[in-house]
Length: 352
Image 1 (cartoon, rainbow, N blue to C red):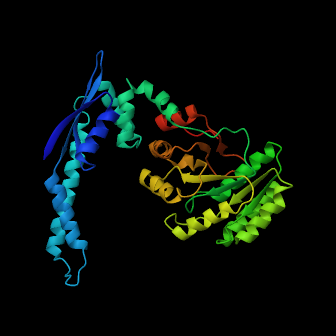
Image 2 (cartoon, one colour):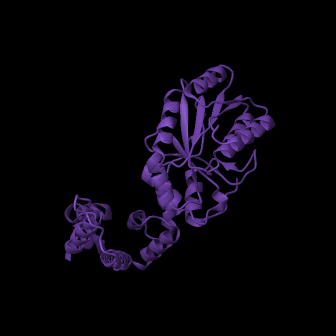
């Protein structure tokens, strides 16, 4: 294994040096923070080039197909799996053991707390670099996240997101809030894929006393928007919930957005109870769309809120609102950055 120490003014700069020279396969073995007139950070990192190369060659041997291809023997497959598993465990062990070697006790407490909140490791380390102790974390988080300024909405607001995230209920909540704000609202439903969803939004529109149109084609969609744009202040658009990995579905959403013919806001809804990997993966598949804001639903069901922070920092989209329950109207909140920071840090209950 090749081991080297990198020195820079900040953790971020030192980490960049590690990645540049040793590649993404490097693991951090220790960190040291030096204070004084010219403060600095030292990172000791290592990379086992032979193990990485051997693993890559073995994977290639298993997956490569040629005219003379023969399936690998079960014993070889088991050996490769065991070796990969051992390598992964070793790397994780070095990461968690090495990061904390030279941190102060206060920063060790910060790092341990952020890990418990499911804040991603690299983001937790960056926060540790800036924080003196736990009391600094809320302010640091507040400075890194954004919220939607509720000075008004565009003519149309389209909600998208994975299946089961709560788009239809959230459309009803937003429409109810618009009515409360003395605005004339209406709903356009694109979710003709599920009969139950159409009936649900129809019930909501009847209760709220606002018009509803359904559209299954772009022509019908454009016609509905043209009809309502002259008589309504805001048009809320409910969409079909599908697997975001379905590229055809995402492409069709893009075509609907481009055909709107009126100023459009696109809100991506994410389930606050989802884990970090699912949130990041979902956004990755939707990122080709012109997303303006993100919103988190089912906040009351979440156990910890680090994944919300990870998503906000990774994709730098303002948060439009949070939802907490099924009540319409009600159970919706337009948070401040301090409110979001408090939620992430303390897991306080959402009082919508």
